[in-house]
Length: 288
Image (cartoon, rainbow, N blue to C red; front, side):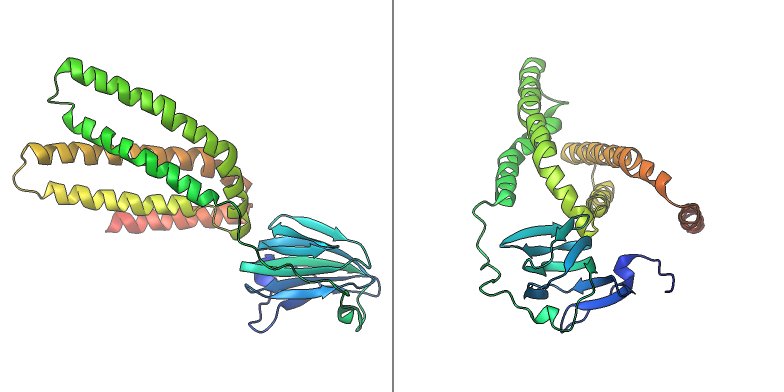
């Protein structure tokens, strides 16, 4: 038996025709293998007289066990007793699972199709949380435009009307935006976080913020070159600068409070490689 170590996603072997397998260990008592599924691929339903332990390494999919279908995501484990109907499939994303079977399957085990068992037909979801979130954001966005308009009028508006409008804006933020944020943190974020871990996209939101920051910078550059610097242009400049300051401050805070502490868990060699990459990038940036 040889030593095998490495990221499971790199050890796995995908096949366009059928799910791929890599045997990590095979003895007379047990077999351990990596199964890799492209979207839509599956292990057909069968009922071998062997115990199965499944650990989901990467992606999302489904496990048929007994007479039910269970969702699978990276980090999940399952134990299916011998003789029980089982099957695994990927849906819309790749799936990599570690399968441990005991005793090792015989040539006829996978041919033991479970009588009467079948994957259930896919049903349309009865609820659409994404639509609910988009709808609520749609209701909130006009209020954000009000905040922008108010910012543009701050310098010229009379004090008493301005004070009243500012109180209304603060009441909206306190009674509308903050409860919205609390609900998302309690419901949406835990669900999304699990999917991000499963699909390997935990930093995608931060990358999107970089795109948005780039768009803000382009907007500011356009305004800087405007002629002349009249009142509306100055107001746009003020708004653009304020927006950039806010998004950058928030972005830095998220990086330093959420992502930077995670770097303490890197292995020494990983830390050294990351530091070298950062220093090289910084040095190259200073040369331009």
